[in-house]
Image (cartoon, rainbow, N blue to C red; front, side, top):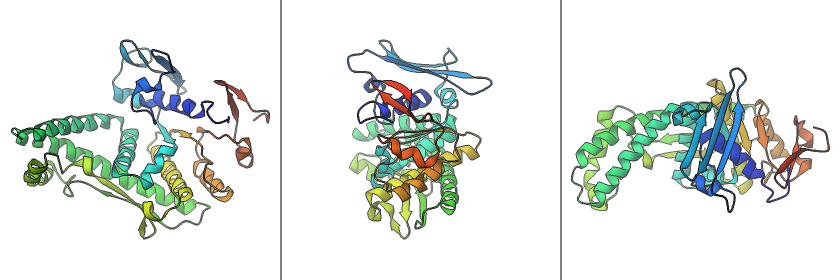
Length: 330
């Protein structure tokens, strides 16, 4: 708890950065520095036996990432502390562009399988090289289409499996919900539609688009054009849901992501920023019930009274960068 601007979101962001090496609101780690400072260092311990120590930061030499005091791969770092977050920017899942929903998919894929970060990296490198070729004469496109197709087919299979699991978790969550909601469904639409059926089929679809790509000087087929449809009842949620309803749907998807990780034996820490904003009392109670099964939920609000009905284990007040237990004693 705390007034506006005291750093509640920054505290949640620090936990997220420590676990993922990225911010949920800043594009670069450099943007996470305190004003006037050259760098920062975050550190924390997690786990019971054995415990793991994570460090993430930035100094004059560049970014810092350490696991148990030593170097590690990014996949090894990501495997240590699963997190699932909700912030106001995640309203874009429901109301924003397809790119926001692709980020949702990829967070889920990497959360479940940290090693998948390598697949994403391979696809992005191949896509960037293809963009450079198309910006020029297009010469040498064939070999790069092959590289792109291999990475694309694997990425599509990963995304499809995650979308299926997420949809099933969401169905179970809504069946148990105290809220009377229309059916909420998600559907993954890969690009190309043949993607995930084997490298040869994916490559054939990419090659079929070559003439159009050369004309427009841009890659027109591949997972960078995937879509995740989120439908509420018979309609796209982005068209029919109010601001409060979009928030509620986003929180339901967040809880479904967390349940999926828990079911995969990777129970996450949940980070929920301004959970109560835009929700009436009834919907807030229903949304809070989404997260009751999880032992570690960090939720921020500027209203102390919000938590009184829910029997939270402990509440803290943030003032001038310092946390103190609330006067309620919880």
